[in-house]
Structures are given as C-alpha cells and as structure tokens.
Image 1 (tube, one colour):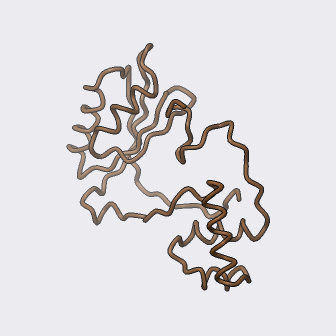
Image 2 (cartoon, one colour):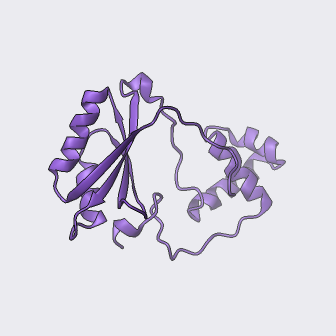
Image 3 (cartoon, one colour):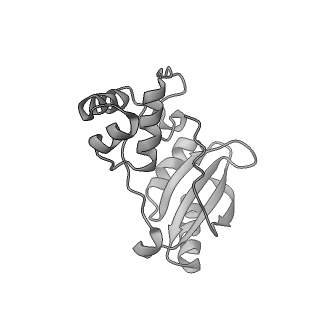
Length: 165
C-alpha cells in the first residue's frame, strides 16, 4: 500500500480495531507513560502476575496495538533546541508520497503528517538556530513540488495525559 495513506504507525485506514478490555487499556496507558517499566512493576500496578502481564504486552504488540517502544529525547541537549512546524502546500501534480521521499532526505525533519485544510503536509523540524531553520526550509523548497510554506516556531509544548484509550 502507498505509504501516503498509512498512519504514523504503518497501519492502513481499513485495519480492524483490536478489542481491548480494561486491563489492556491500563497496560497501554502505563506503557505510554513509561515504556521502560518492568513487567513486575506493571503487573503490580494492574494486579496481574509478571508472566500474565508479559503475555498481555506480547499480544498487544502482535495485534499492533503497541507499535513500538520509543525514547523521548530532549532536543535541547542534542544541540537542536529550535523546533518548528512547517506547513507545506504542494504544487498540482506533486503527491504526498513524492514529498515524503524528499522530506526523509532532509536532515532535521523529525516527522511528517499529511493533513487536511489549507496545507497538504505538516513537517516537524528540529534545528540549531534560526539560520539552520532557514537552511532546512530552503532545502525542502529546493526539492521542488512545493507551492508555498508557512512556519510556526514551537515556543513550548506539553503532553496532555487525557488519553482516548
């Protein structure tokens, strides 16, 4: 399937939703907060044995409810403290998949979303400074197929823990 219609986790829109019970939901919420929690500590939290907890996590991974475990990186400490969203309006005839191929090659691009509205794509970037941000935007534009851009610098961001699951 074309990667332009896949979600950020690689599933397609037609994938059937897994049935989660309340214990599964507690596991998913706990792992979303701390993916490094041990099966013993997770089991204590949800009132299951470590083995039963591990089996549930394995099943959630196999069913693609859990798509991976990731580290949260402090970009300030990596030397790229300036983050921004760059909204991209594509030229007629340029597909989101074409732009995705280009964006994957530009250093500093951390994610890409195909969106609805006035723009076609939203790229999240991490840069050293304003000059680096300008070079990154120019690298995206130089790849062709872009009609226009709009950039918003991220001043502060926090995660809301009101999860849908």
